Amino acid sequence: MIELTRLNDTKFILNADLIESIEEVPDTVIALTTGKKLFVKENKYEIRDLVVRYKQEVFNKIL
Image 1 (cartoon, rainbow, N blue to C red):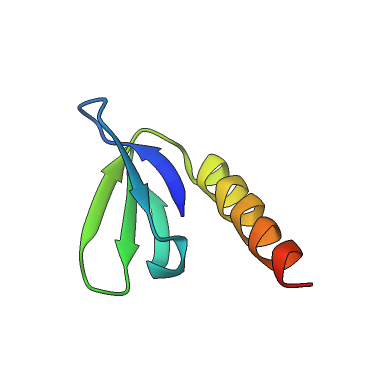
Image 2: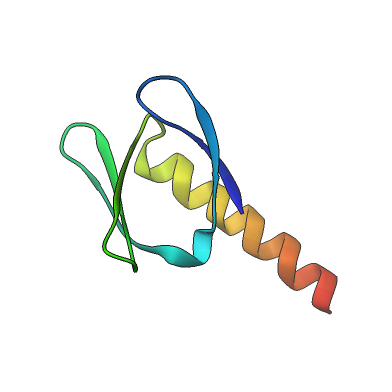
């Protein structure tokens, strides 16, 4: 799970496994596997880093 910020400054937690794609047009839009789209303040590189850290945390607990 990663914490992100909506355009109205509210924070929320997203299941990173649901991310299908991320675009900047110019706002950052996250397309989910469910078909839903989320607009967030973080850029695509920040989101990528959050997902990588989350996955490392999960896999380190498994191993």
